[in-house]
Length: 340
Ligand SMILES: Cc1ncc(COP(=O)(O)O)c(C=O)c1O
Image (cartoon, rainbow, N blue to C red; front, side):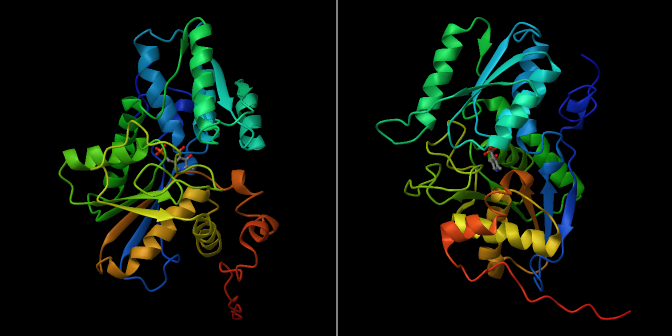
C-alpha cells in the first residue's frame, strides 16, 4: 500500500479524495443571527456523501491486514443508499466483489450508481411480519449470504467501531478548519458512526463543544416513539450498537416536512443542493437559534448532495402529495434587482 495521501490513509487514486471536504460559512440561511454557521460539505466526497468515509474506514484496515483479499473476498452489506455507493466505490477500486442487499424502497438512482460501480444488488421483497419493516429482513438476508458465500465479510455499519473511528477525522477537519473555535456541532444520525466519531474525538481532546444529535421523528435511535418516515438517510428503525447515551449533549427530532423546508431554504438562500438530513440539521439549528449565545460558532455536517432527492424533496408534486398545500413555506418574495 502506498503512503497515505489523506488523513484516512487511502493511498492514491479516487479514494485519496475521500475526506478533507470544504467547510463553508453560511451567511444567508439565518439572516440577522448573532452567531456564525459553518457547513461541512460531505457531498464533496467522490461517492457524494459522508458514508464514503465509513466505507473506506471499515474496509481499508481489513485489506491492509490481509483479511480481505482483492480478487477473492466478497463484501456483503445492507444499505439503501449512501453507504452502498461508498462500499461499491471502495470494492471496485480494490477489486472486491460487493453484494448490496436492498429493498423496494431503495431509490432506483442509487441502485443504478451501485451497479455502474460493479456492485451486485440483492432485493428483498417481503417486510418483517412482526415489525412491518424491511430492515430485519435485509439483515437476515445478509447473514444468509455471508454464511453461504466463501470468503464473505459483512462490515456491519451499525456495530463496527471502524465506522465511528473514520469520523474522528471528520471532527478533526472541522476543528482544524475553524482553528479550534467551535461551540456547537449538529450531526444527523443513523448508524451513529458520524456522531460517535465526532463526539469521541471532541471529548478526548476536552473541547468545550455542545454536540447536538439530529434524529428523525419516528426513528428508534433515541427515546422517541417509532413511526413512519418518508425521507431516507438519517434515522433508524432499531437502535444501533454504536449508539451510547452520552454521545450527544442534546437530541433534536425533526419531521419530514421540516427536512424539506430546511433543504428548500438551503437551496434558495445559499445555492446549496443537499439531501434530506442536511435540511434536518438546519431545521434543528433554527429551532435553537434563540438560545445560541451571540458570537457562538456553530458547525453543521451536511451529509450528502441533493441530486438523489430530485423526485422527492425537490419535487413540488411529491411535496403536495405528502404535505398538501403547505403554504409553500420555503418560498420568499423575490427582491427586485436594482439597476447598477
Ligand atoms: C444522508 C445521510 N444523512 C445522515 C446519515 C447518518 O450517518 P451515520 O450513519 O453516520 O449516523 C446517513 C447515513 O447513512 C445518511 O445517508
